[in-house]
Length: 529
Image 1: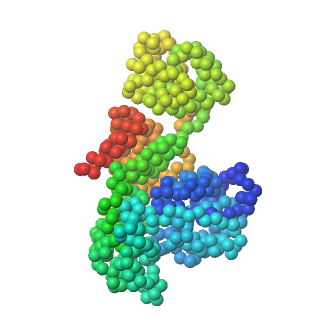
Image 2: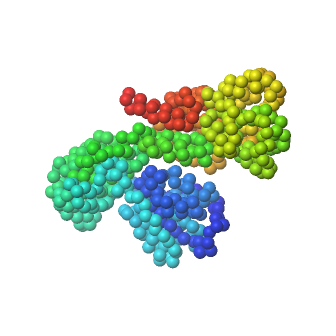
């Protein structure tokens, strides 16, 4: 077990009761990060300490405050033994006694086929207050994501849940009534067997020995609800061989019974356009969630890896001077949503009135930037049809640039192409005013991305600016020649190619909508190839 301690952040809004310390046994769900309950997500937001398992999605850890302590207490393939469980119990008790809010984040549900019950017993014995937050167990979710209902009026009247990892000695003492389970499956029952990958062949053989017909439908679902989901549909007699042939690995759920035969007819997740695709999103943290939600809605696995965040510029001197004489400008050009928001925020800070814009007309590059301008009840006088700085000249018109005084609130470091072109077309003065600066986020999980790269587990990296590309390289520091990329525009695409990415998606419209549509189209072509 390893730990990565981080300084904790207290939430001043908590009640005095919370200060006594409490443990929350929270079910993280089956793997997809958006399957955690609302209660579980809310508790993550206020946690001082997160103690999490190996099967918990890394995306869920983003819900915790940045300064919350994160402690890995995972297990894979039955590695966890009683000594290690005792250590986990000690950690929970110790942090709670120190007055901390501890979220024990467990894969699936904390009380189903896990050691949540043992942890609750230890907390109760130690006099520690605790709460149990149920989660979506893989026993239900994996079959559902494979299109297999566990009960059905014509095929299955009841369901039994079993663990299949016991050793032969435990099986021999009758702890699992395999004969009775085989009889139940024959009587229109459905058997759901967890943790059975290593002993699948012997488990299925015991059901057959109990009298279950060899032709009984059976299925195995690997990593249900995630991009790694793989479903094998067969029979009791053939499932072990078919899963071995398919290379199916743990964690996996077995379903035995007539309901399993409905999988081919009812499968929905594996039919989605981005099913099985892991797509890395490199936008700023504030912008990744909507993008990620849309990828997930199409069946893909969105890995949020912000490579950029905004901060105040090194100095507001130029911007403040420009705001003070705002009415003297002929044009105000915004090149990004951040430029708009940071400009407006600075005007608020200085208690300025938007009416001070006076006669200045506004140009915006890209529909998102234009929409942001309009949200402040401002009119966009010019927007180039091609969403890049160089196209602004045509949108405004050379005659209106000549002798004009132009203000560009933008990032502290950016391409100088636009200011240079405006000056070349006779602008009287171009004031480039830093409204913000971009930087590399300090807490991104670069190690996780490196691990995915090393195992060829990334299908696509999406980039929405050249900065996201260069920062990705700076953060990950790994060879990327084998990585395929999606770039929102030609400049971003050129930057990605220059750093060794294989740019396979580059929409002609430089918007997020167009980027997502192009990603779907690309993978559709890959599937048909």
